[in-house]
Structure formats: C-alpha cells, structure tokens
Amino acid sequence: MHSRARWAAWLAVAASLPTQLGAADDACDVRGVARVVAVGDVHGAYENFVGVLRMSGLVDDQERWTGGRAHLVQTGDVLDRGPDSRKALELLMRLEKEASKAGGRVHALLGNHEAMRMQGDRRYVNAGEYEAFRTPESEKLREEYYRAVAGQLRKRSMDAGEALDEAGLKERFYAEAPLGLLEMREAFGPQGRYGRWLRGRDTMVRIDGVVFLHGGISPAVAPLGCQAINKAVRRELNEVTAPGPADRLSTRPDGPLWYRGLAQEDEAALGPAVEEILKALAARAIVVGHTPTGTGRIRTRFDGRVVMIDAGMLPSFGGHLAALEVDPKGMTALYPDGRVPLGPAQAARRSDARRQVALDGPDRPLDLGVRVVEMR
Image (cartoon, rainbow, N blue to C red; front, side):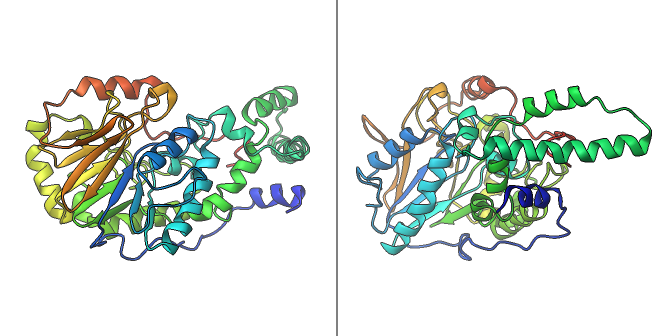
C-alpha cells in the first residue's frame, strides 16, 4: 500500500469489524491427545523459545516441526519486553501449518500483551520490536504521517481560535513515534498480517480435561465457561482497536488474560473457589502463564490442580528454559537438565511471584488516553 494511502486508512474509523473465527471450533473439547507440550511467556526471547521447542522434541535444528501428532500449547505473551517477538510470531504461524500436516496441532493462545498490542498499549514494547518493522521507507512514511497529524491539529486549533505549539508538537511526535512504529501498527491492525491472525486465536483451550490459558480463571468469570470466554474476548478484540473499558473481559483485572489469583492468592483461602472453578470448566487442572514463578522452575499449587509454567524465559527474568509435558500418565516438567514428574503442590511462596512481576513495573490494564501519534 502506498504510504499516503496508509496514513489515510489509519485516520479512518471503522464502524464495525467482522469477527475473525480462525481458531478451531473444538478448542474447548479437545480429546485423545497422546502428548501435549505447554510453553509459557516468550516475550521476544526467540532463541530461548527455539531452545525450549528443541528440548521438547518439537522442532529440529532447522526449526521445522518434528513433534508428529503432539500438540503444542503456547499460553500467550509472545510480545513485548524482548526484541525478537516478530520472529517468534512467524515461527508459531509456520509451525501451526507444519504441525497440522503431520497430524499434530499448535494452540497459540492470547496473552494480555497480545491484547495490549492490538489495543495500542505500547508500555512494554522493546526497541528491537520497532526495529524489526523498520524499512528503507520508514523515515519518509513517518514524515508524511507527521504532516497529516499536524494538519489535522492545526485545523482544530484554528477552529477553536487557539495557537498550536508546532515546535512542541513535532518534538512530542518524534519522541512517541520511533521508526518502525507505523509499520508495526499496520501489521497488528485488524487487516494486518499479525492482527488478523491474533484476532482469530483462542483465549483458552481444554485438552483431555486440562485447561490452558494465559492469566487464570477467576471465580467471577468461571461460570461463563470456555466457549463463552473465547467468543467474548475474540469479539472484543475485533471490535476495539484502542484501550477498552475496564469492564471488558479482555481488560478487566479478574479476566482470563490478566488474573493472577491462581498464582498469588493464599491456597487455603482460595481452595474452595478453585474447586468450583474446575467444576464450572469441567476440568481436572488449570495450566497458566503470566505470573513468573520466580524460581526458574515450573510450580504447582492447590495440590497440583494449578500449574504455573512461566519460568522466566526472557533473559532479564533469568533466561530459564522450561516446558510442561502432559500425557495419559500425568504431568512432567521438562528442563535442559532433565525431566521432573510433578507431584502435589508445595507450600506457596507468594513473595517469589510478586517480586518477579515487579521487575518491569505494574502489569495491569491502563487507559492510555489520547496521544497525538495514535490519532484517537
């Protein structure tokens, strides 16, 4: 698309967006899978992600699918914080096709950072992520877009009888618009390569009675059930291209993309609610990412009924390689130094998870308001 046509399209406001189905209809009732490998938050740590897939026997040295009929579940947060999220997305998209041809499957689930990217929340975007979208035309594109933004704001100021601080506007614009930003926004837009694909992903999947998702299922959300949760989040992400209201399922703190209660709340106090959550989901266990374990290892809670698999793949979180294997015999944690069968949960150490999450500041929904570069 010509650069001038691009910014013209960005200035247009779509009245409605069609729902992108994309994901499988049976995501809430997948059965008869001999081997499932679940991998937590990637956050742009491409090389470590590949390392986990090789360690698990799902890809070869050429990063081609070798998992046969196995199912890979990636529980979201491929994006933000690390530089190589675009490469990780491309890998997942390719493996999705290769696994299907081999009789296996890739379940690439949504995390809160995927939702943030689609909603224009750039708090945790890494400089390398912008650079991955930079092209020889980026400077020209940014300058044309600036002229369009300045022209609109100049007209608004004139209509209001106010003076426009053009020097300040330009300084702010270039501070908020690194090269590659506009191309990245287009790619994650409703019709962009990654935006279309992500808007068709599921929030959760249930495989042989085990539920996998990013954040967790709260007592308030559990009664909706798997199918309704998937449909609601997909509908919201197809309808909203800016930070949405806090009461939406995709943005609320107790929603499936953000909830940390299963990872952080007192086990004795929340235990009865966990039983009800499992009943509502017809599940025997719940596997979550989102909240780093703080130990570099996979952790179980609530007598093994909740499994935390975000061991901290990102180098700044320790660069730990870990995956969860689920088969008819049970669950096993996979590490470079061996396999560890998972037994009953040990006493939860809430401080570990809270300290690790604090490394990059509060990770919660935020209404960014109006920014010049976002043109909202």
